[in-house]
Image 1 (cartoon, helix red, strand yellow):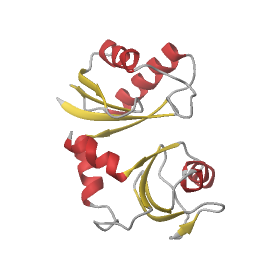
Image 2: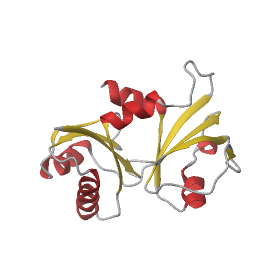
Image 3: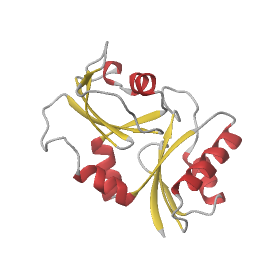
Image 4: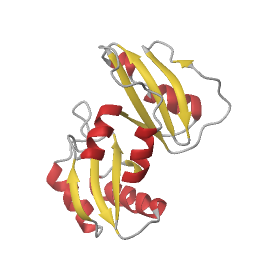
Length: 174
């Protein structure tokens, strides 16, 4: 069995696309996954599957969610092992300063043609590293000005979802 985390984009954010935890768990169980649980918010689903074909699993989850929920539900799937590596190879130093957000953005495509660091216009965010399908960014302060998703999607012509590094660490140790 492989342990996965499905990072769902746009569910229960800002009062839009509200999905109860029970409904989400029901969808994952109906796909034959075991040990399904929701972490913190319904945008993070931990589960186990026999299959090691992550793309087939991601596609099946995304299709089922879209069919049941009635809108396109984007899914970014990572194994626990991949998340452990992501944390281990993080460019962020331990004990970050107060008011600095450490963010990881999961993308559907691998970006090309960029020079780092990238300051995100009209934002407090700055992209400091890109590794594979993940973008590491810093924000200074809190609020909407630090959300890198729209910029990353536009700049790299990809779909994305962002999580705080602390949330990813908590998922791995849960």
